[in-house]
Image (tube, rainbow, N blue to C red; front, side):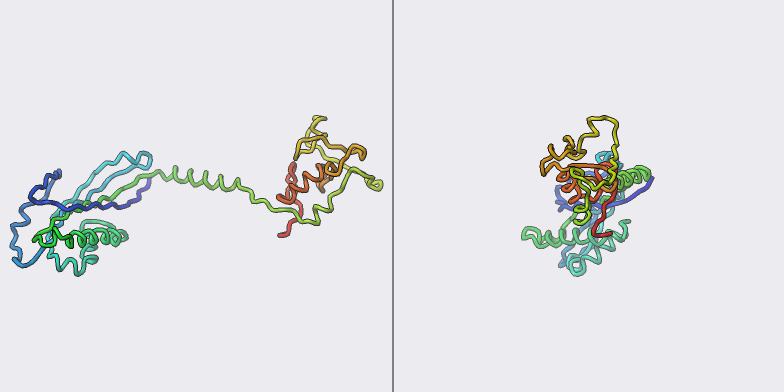
Length: 258
């Protein structure tokens, strides 16, 4: 069993006067943060931060189980935060436990939301803007053996793909025709089946092979490959112009890459 983590972040503006949100274990009374001595002329961000770990099985992604939650409140002068929002936000995220590799992207989301909120005409004059941040660490559990099996199956599927390479033109032209006198040469024909009907068929088009000249039209000439298998000439020529392998035994004809 192995573990991998990802992070999600949600942000919202909280109305402190009408905050009806509930948290299971609030660390601080939300209203108490405003009892601290704040500068009269200063404007502030109040961050309500919740960091939750969520256990998620890859076999059932809808079965999310929160198992650890951290909460805190943080008040920062708005001017100071906006002047260096990315660095300050990344420091906050690292402090609550977010892995360093993820703080940059999350900080950009949070600081952009804070800036957009602070510049809204309806909120710009507010002395304290309360922002709720919920950062979720999604802990995915997956089975090493299952992942390895999936990768093997994917590799096997890819291995079934055969990239066809045509035979050379000269090797196709050199195929021996069997419908005319062969100068006394002995013709050896290789059959892969015992059925008489199948022995008389071209395995490309599955039609009858004619060896006698009187029954043979030009497009029905019979040719023999070097492996001794025979086909209609037009059938096997079209085949070899796409694939250099014999349709029956996979004998390899010469290619341009040889």
